[in-house]
Image (cartoon, rainbow, N blue to C red; front, side, top):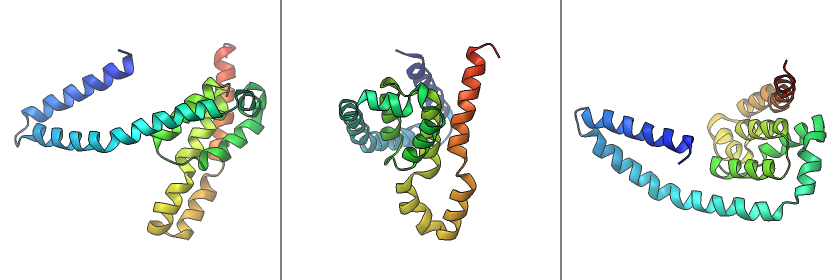
Length: 168
């Protein structure tokens, strides 16, 4: 068992124990909610794993290395910033894609830009949630005010990574 899995299990046990000792049978309610989430999320996560597997076979590794690799520089960061915003789905889709890109030769700075852009600009969330709930004016102001963040995150990652590995 890896460290992340162990931490998650420990967190579940601690929170479950706290719920057990609270009045009102909170642990039973928590188990019911957890079971419902498990039934809802398991098929999604399973399909996301298959998508990542198919994606890893479809993506040309030489293309990833040239577009997002160490030598891609700012161009790779800007391209990753664009692609991240158009990656559909939640974390169960985005993170497996990021892992596949990393294993295919993508450098860390473009991946940071990719994940930052996905977090900020996921097109599907803008269409489904933001515009209907907040309106076009809010959406435009939010996007324009945060447009520089994914490239900036990638560039800062490159600077930190260079300084950390060269001894600052």
